[in-house]
Length: 55
Image 1: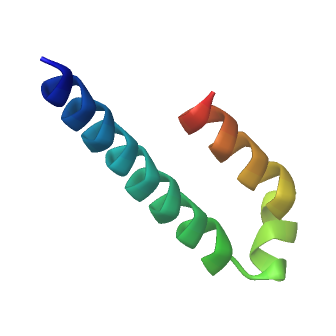
Image 2 (image 1 turned 60 degrees about the vertical axis):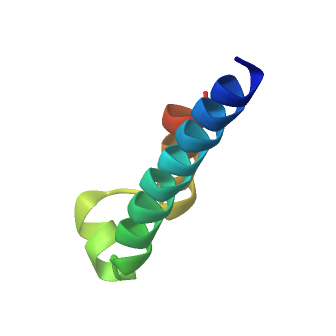
C-alpha cells in the first residue's frame, strides 16, 4: 500500500518534470525576435508554465 503510493507519486513527479522540461526547451528555442513578434516575455512564459504544471 505505502509502496504503491510512493511509486505513483514518483511517476507523477517524473511525468510533470518531463512535461515542464519539454515546455521550457520550447520556450528557450524562441529567439528574441520571435518573442518580440509574439509580444511575449520569456520570463513571464516560464513563470506561467511553472504555475500551470506545479500549481
